Amino acid sequence: MKRYLDPKSDLVFKRVFGEHAHILRAFLNAVLPLPEGEKIVSLEYLSPEQVPEIPILKFSIVDVRCEDQLGRRFIVEMQMEWSEVFLKRFFFNTSKAYVQQLDKGEAFEYIQPVYGLCLLNDYYDRKTEDYYHHFKILSVRDPKREIQGLQMVLIEIPKFKSLHAPGAETDQEIWLRYLQETGKHEKGPEEIAAYTPEVKEALELAQVAAFSRGEMEAYDRYWDAVSTHKSLMNAKLSEGIALGHGKGLEEGLARGLEAGRAAGIEEGLSQGKALALQEAFHKLVASGMPPEQARSLLGMDF
Image (tube, rainbow, N blue to C red; front, side, top):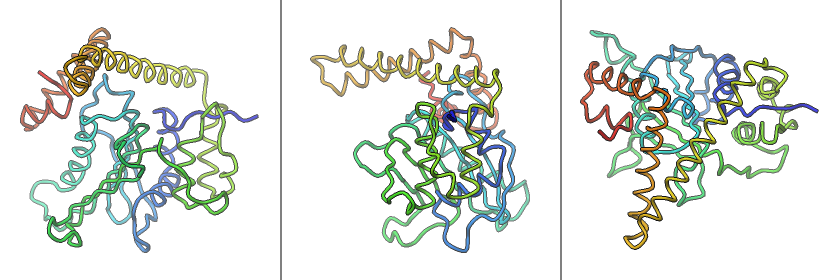
């Protein structure tokens, strides 16, 4: 019996989508709102160096950056949990990819469109059943008028449900099933392997047999870190609700979130990672970013 790893982990996600451009091309064509005639034909990977890496948040964020033959850029992020900080970081990364296309003195007409894709293994908006959120720059008075060049798509993987029966599923549904089901109880949706060569290869790349013992140990440590962090945050959230008893649930939730954030930083400090957060802050300020914006981006409350 074949055993599979979860492609939402950093190790497997980068192996599948960060090392095989043809698989990433098929995936992006399936999940992004690209009109017919504007599908990606080929692409190449860009340097991942765009913002400083923050070790405290490292296990929550995995990204892949690429550019297609038309010059369009795509920022793909896999995030394990949701927070306003991550939304700001996602918007920052997408916007910076747009700005960084030009060197000093170059003409603005050379700027190409940028698409940001956030794959979220958490909930962004619990008030709606929609799992697919497409953001564009539109006129407030006339939404039909759009400023071209920057689009963002956020997909809530836990919410996804196929609307079509097996055999009649769309490309997008097949790929989201791949992300949602592969690795769950070490199983995989093997019936989708017959759908396209890229899907079949993506499944093969996620098999346990494709990874070394050292890689498997790193995979287990990754999920241990995710579970530990979520447990810690949930405990602090419950503590905050209890502290807020008699003062209103909203205040209790606020206390819980604050306590969870403080606990996360404390954990990072114990591992010597808070220094890296400070270093990232100083680098952003040195690059010209206002201190308040840098603090907000990094989730710093001091």
